[in-house]
Image (cartoon, rainbow, N blue to C red; front, side, top):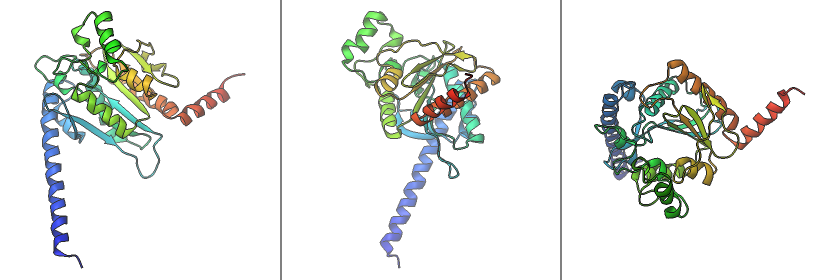
Length: 295
């Protein structure tokens, strides 16, 4: 027989769970309203229908970093874990909008092929201000704020000597000085993705950092290595930690690709992930290619 204090504890736990769920819903609704009011390609209801979660990650202005998980399914084991990130730079609207398009696809067709963690907007302060900007609220380029050995002589020196103190590429006073980049590193450590896909604009190419072979094309975007910059996510995760980082550079920051192009990029990305997400998948794909190659 349950004792009275056990009933009280269970009631307390249920009450706490309800409160947490209500708080999450309120945060997500607020952020979806802001996102839907800012982006022409994502309306408020589109955002709400995704059923995002407000993580513990916060921006400088205390906006929550939203996440959508597509977990493993009972009927199959996923090939691996994929972390998909949009909106690292706040003025690259298309990098956020296209991630919402892909989440709508996964909401309908998630098959359990991969275990997905998706962050549609890492830099809410940069996007959702009156005039969007690349940097976060502290005017730091989040894609130059990731850990580097000897920060002053790598990231800071590059910013001073190579960019001429370009304000749009300021890496911050020290690595992980910004709450958004600091939270992302913690999340990478916790989630331990096999591949990271980061969406940017407007170079119209595919960039890559890390082990194994890069995707030579995603849709009509072809591989064109831009270089690995000190403090970038590609340098930190791809070079230092050996986690493959695929950077999708859309052609325009303010104009979405056509629906066909969006679907073509997605199809090619899923194919590449299937063949490269783990070392075992890569070895198998190489073997299959050799078997299929003409003598």
